[in-house]
Amino acid sequence: MRLPKFEYLEPTNVKEITSLLKKNADAILVAGGTDILPKMKQRIVTPKFVINVTKIEDLKKIEFGEKKGLILGSLATLDNISKSKQVIEKFTALAQAAGRIASPQLRNMGTIGGNISIESMCMYFNQSHEWRKGRPHLCFKLGGDRCFVAKGSKECLALFQADTPPALIALGATVTIVGSTGKEKIINIEDFYTQKSKKVNILKPTDFVKQIHIPTPPKGTKSCYLKMAQRAAIDYPIAGAAACITISGNKCKNAGIAVTSVGSGPLRLKEVEDILIGNSITDELIAKAADAAYEKIRPMPHFNISAWYKRKLIRVLVKRSIKQACI
Image (tube, rainbow, N blue to C red):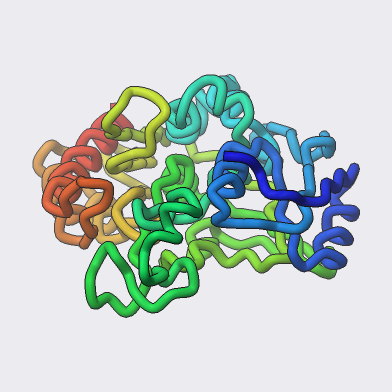
């Protein structure tokens, strides 16, 4: 499949990105292109303007300081994040999540900004234009009136499958968004997602992600991300779970638990966190927390994976991720 025709634009700084997005309503940003270029070939998106942002070096930074925490420019590659010494030591879950995405070639190209902004996926949506044209009706995600995943559903039920968002949620990250006026807005990454498959995140056409910030974790904090996929590489997760646990005085002082590939966005499991916080971490408590995760999620079958299997798998992954975060 070939790319559709488009006009190529190449800004050299953040201000130019804002200006180009304001002037060109039908434009998309491209960095690694590992997600958006296949969508263009499938004619899922057909922008008139493609804005290549890879020349902006300031957005590629990975900086850490004990006081300021970890700052990731939106163009920091997944490979560089997964291999960063500071990320591996203090933000282990993020390094593990970034390191499990796709393949080495794609991690060299793909960026953290692109991964957190990835759209939900569906076997009825992520297909070629010719395949979709052969169906008599369009789904919600394509402007139609139905969902082919769940007959009779009144909304899109496509699946969100990115790896890094649950790790970032568990670690307490914030996202800096630049709007059409050039003004920056900082929000918790949990609030970045709408939990609606038709439009997964809050970004407007003239918005873009500038950077991600994670505060330095307190002493006694460890984290872990675990993923189960059908293949060892080049595959999205069937399910993924991240845990960030702070132990103080033999008790859990703080906890962050989040999962992916179970719904319309990454899901923070506050019920699981509440079970852990203030208590000594025992096998019995971890099993109780994992059971709470099992009860919380209500996944739909996707890509030939049953909802029953996903729930069982989340219970296992949450249990194992908490245990590894406590080692």
